[in-house]
Image 1 (cartoon, helix red, strand yellow):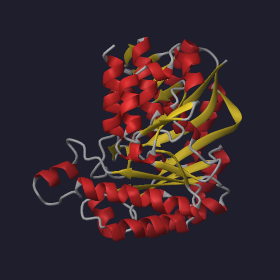
Image 2 (cartoon, one colour):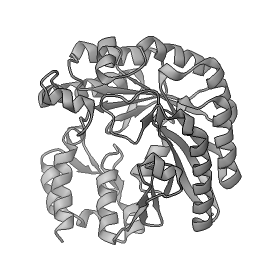
Image 3 (cartoon, one colour):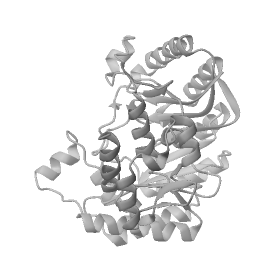
Image 4 (cartoon, one colour):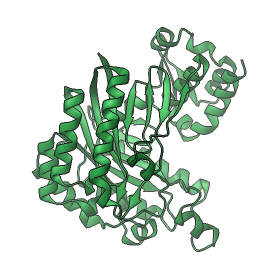
Length: 378
C-alpha cells in the first residue's frame, strides 16, 4: 500500500488578503457543498488510479479552511477516512484564520480528528494587519490559542511575516515576543513576497507604500535566528522553527520529495515521479473538469529538485540516502560549486550530510544558483 502525504485545498475565504495570489475566492461560501462533492469525486478517481493509499499526514489548507462549520469538517474527514487508511499517529492539520474561530468550531474540528492547528497571525500590530488586508487583530490570535488548548489541541503553529511595508525592527521584535508568549509548538517566519496582480503590488507601484530594503530584510531574518532558539524553538528549515518533535511532518514530506497527493482546486501532487496540478479555476473544478497538467520528471530533474529542496533543511541532504534513491554520488553532482561554497563558509560536508551553514541559509537562493547551474550543465 502506497504511503502519501495528503493535501486538501479549501479555496474559500472571507476576504482576500492584499498580498494573496493563491487560489481563493471570497464570498463563494454558497458553493461549499458542491465543492465537497467534487472533492469526493476526485478522491474516488485518484484512488482508482493509484490504488489503496495510507496517509501519514493530512493537511487542509486554503483559502480559509476555518470557514467550514464543524459538521462540514466532520463530513470531510469522514470522506477521507472512507477512502484512505489514516496512520494511527498521523499529523492532521487545519489552517485557520483567527478571525473565523470560536469554541464550538474548534471543539468540532478536534472531534473530527484534526490534531494540529496552523494560525495565520502574521503581525501583532493593527496597522500592519490592515495593510495586509487581514480580518483579525492580535487579540483574536491569543483568544484562538486559548480556545484551541481548551479543546484539546496540543500542536499549534503560528505563521508570522516580516519585511512588511512600514514594519520596524521594534514591530518585529514585539511580534516575535507576543507569539512566543502564547507558547505554540511551532513558528513559521516568512519574508513577504509581493506577487504580481495583488492589491499590495498595485499600492507599491503607485508609491503609496514601500518595502524595507535588502539589508533591513536580512536584519529581520537574523533577529529570528537569534531570538527563537533562546525560547526553545530550533530551526529545521529556512523559515520554520519548532520545539523538539513538533516539526511539521507534512511540509517535511514536500521538502524530502516523498509522494504527496493534492485534492481540490489548484492542488498539486507528486506521485510515482509524476507531477500534476489541478485547475485554479473554481467553476471549472466544480464542473468536474480538473484541467490537470502532468509532467513526468526526468532523472536529472528529480535530482535537481532533491538538492534544491533538501538544502532548505538545516539537516541538509544525507549522502547515503541520496545515492540509494537517485543512484548518484551527491558530492559529484556539483563538485566545483560545492568546493567554492565550502571555501566561503556557506556549505559544509560532515562525512554524512551536505548542508548549508547559517550564513549559507541567509543567501540560499544565490548558493543554489551556483549548484544547480553546474548540475544542469552536465
